[in-house]
Every structure is written in C-alpha cells, then in structure tokens.
Length: 358
View (spheres, helix red, strand yellow):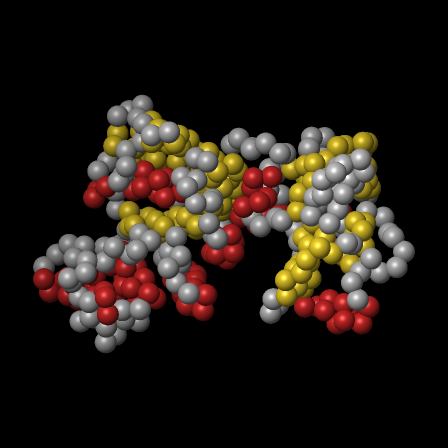
C-alpha cells in the first residue's frame, strides 16, 4: 500500500508545506519540536483541515482540495495514538478498548478480551487508566486502536513519556507488533534512534517544510543538507570549498582534505559524525585535525572530547566533537590523548548549507 501526502496550511504566522510519497508500511517523520510533525499527522487524520493539497492512501483519497474531497475523520479508518494516549479516564481498560468496536455488546466484549490477551493486559481489564503505568497505558491505547482494525495507525511521539528502560522495552514490543500488522504506520518523533530502529522510510521536516524523504538508511548515510544531517545526529560541520576533483578546504577547521574518489560537483559544507574519527599518535597523517582538548565528558559507553580548532587568519574557533567508543579506551589509557584526529574519506558527508527542497 502506498501513501501520498501533499499538504499546505497557514497556521497563524506558521506555514506548513509538506510533501512526500512512500511505499513502505513503516514511515517515520523526524523533526525538532515545533517543526510541524504533529500538525501533519492531524491533517492526515482529518482533525485539522489543510488549506490545500492531497492525502491518498492506496486507492482511498481522503483529501483533495482540487476535487473538493474531505472525508470526515470517523470515516477514514485511521487510528491515532496521541502523546498522552487519550484514554477515557472514567472508563476501565476493557471499556476503553470496546468503545470503538462496532457490533453487539457481546461482540464488543469478545473483541476487547481478544485485544487484552494480545497486548498482555490480563488482570488489568477492570482498572482505570490512572491505575496503570505509562507502558500499560500505551498498550491499552494501542489495543483500543487495533480493536477496530484501522488501515493506518498514526503514532505521535509514542515513547516521549516513558523512562529510558521502559522506552527500549516498548520499542521492541512495537517492532514485534509491526511484523504482524498489515497496514501503514506513520510515526512522528524528534528521536533519531527510535526512527532508525523502527521506520523503513523517513521524512525530515524543518520549520514546516519537507527537507528530504526516502529510505531511512539512505538518508542517514547521505542526508544531503546540513539541516538533515543535524537531525540525523551529525555533530561536526565545516564550510567547505572545492579546490579540484580530489581536494577541498575544510575552512572552519583550517585543513585541506584529499580524497581518492572524485568529489561531488556541488557542496559547500561537510559533516562528520563524532564517533567516526580515527585517533592518530605521533607523526601527522593526511587529512588530520590537531588535537587540543578543551573539555571532556565521560559516560558509561563513550567519552566525549571537545577539540579546539582555529582556521588560519581567523580569531574564531570551530570546536570538533570526538566521541571515543569503548573499543579505543584501552589505547587511550596506554598512550594518552592522540596528537591528531584523522578524517576518513568514507565517512565524510558532503552537504549543502541551505535546506534541500523535495
């Protein structure tokens, strides 16, 4: 099943203009807070009417401003999991699950019992939402959605209210659930790790605009713009000037970089992920940044070093972040801090400073 979304909406001083098409069942929308992710979901669901555009899922057209189609939310067969789960506070878990099911009282009860078993809510059917943990509330909300078998499920920051341990557990449960769910799931998040773990295709939104869309792993490998690289977790950037087919100047870091492969024709910025640097002790190698540590933060699984760099003739420094993984800790202990950090060609992200348009 495919989905096409092309939506425009003026919302006060905020203008949203989002476009993407996808063939996958698991789609992620990634963006910072206030970028328009949740508004996009609400327009897909029909809760908010766009000013213009199109929402088509498979052969079903839910909204088309040109043909004056705007199917009411109740008829779209879309399940929506809100950030706060939106369970009815005075209804029990079983009543919440049954409330959206069509049929007789006996049929509703049977369906609720089926969902309670499927989502591991046994012995919780008679409890109120306030008596449940965050993870139990999420399972109850998902069970309520699945009880009426929607074609599409919209997940709005589904793990934002959970602690770290429970978040990981619930993400794994969701992955297992997705394996058996035949419909489309669209999940919005500002957390790149959960998007990467769960979603096959990705849409990145910034300030109400689509920055890039495509296969999730492809976008992480080649985000194309600085905006997309930042949202996928890149920590280091430098303005870049192409010198020839195999040479460019990383201007903010004050070094010239040589490559084996022919450089892209058009880029004005490079990105480099903080864990990809190669530490070098002793003599300088090609494509190296000198190490002058200005700060360090030691975590359980990595050490974060902040390196001062200064381009020649500039009074400003562009700090480089190196996140040393545990596999180099013993070497750091034996040799001390490296003299250089080497940029490895295969990990350079060639970017445009400006936002890409899709």
